[in-house]
Length: 132
Image (cartoon, rainbow, N blue to C red; front, top):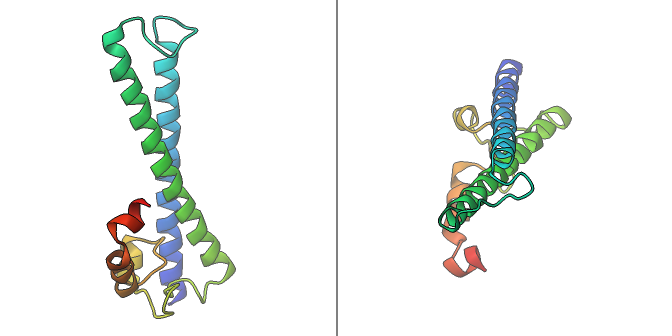
């Protein structure tokens, strides 16, 4: 990969990192607003039993989304480490060693597998392996 391509991909990773960090910060702000806006400041639950299920579901969904964003941020950070520590290895498939391709990396700059290996990874996953 050329230096220009690597610089472009580094910018893409940094843009993605900034976007995810901003989204996580906003999620934290919304969670704090929900907690401070509850009718009982000492409790995360509302007084109305009918609203408790909704509140609980909203908190669970927010937690799951934040977890997903956190994992994505971790993948981006790992890609940045690969790019800085071993730039000659960045863009090579972690499974077969072939080039991932600039087009794929431009879309998914944190990709660590080529399309063939990624498709093979998906086909190897069985329902029991995915859930067990």
